[in-house]
Amino acid sequence: MVTYNEYLKNILIQILDSYNNLKEIKDQSGDLNNIKKELLKINGFIKVIVNKIDSDKITSSDFKIVKSKFSHYLDSYFFVKEIETMAPLYSDDVSRVKNMRIKILEALESKKMIEDAEELIEKI
Image 1: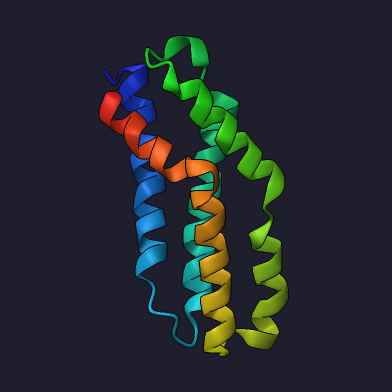
Image 2: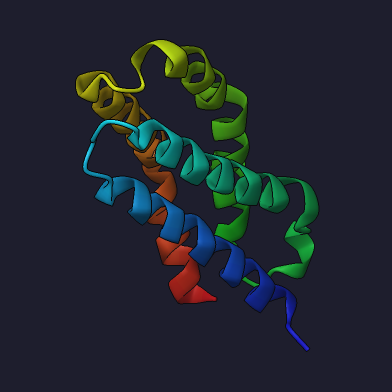
């Protein structure tokens, strides 16, 4: 049986995997779909943590900080809508694809959110 901490750790690992996949995209024509796919995964996993994971059941006190940052991210950034809007017009424009990917990475890295998630994985 998987413990609550292991469950949280697995979700955080999946967020970091998608984050790393975003970093590795080479900004080529058609990559906007790949960016959207990874972003949807990240957003979904963050929503699970914010809405379903109970802070009282996690042994690490750092979890509340990470959960707060995840909640702020969900409230502040709406990249999926932007991608859907720009996809028909600019999906082959490499510079716009690169700019969108960089903006998403900057948002994920803001307030050391990804860094804190990595540290939490090590502590769990």
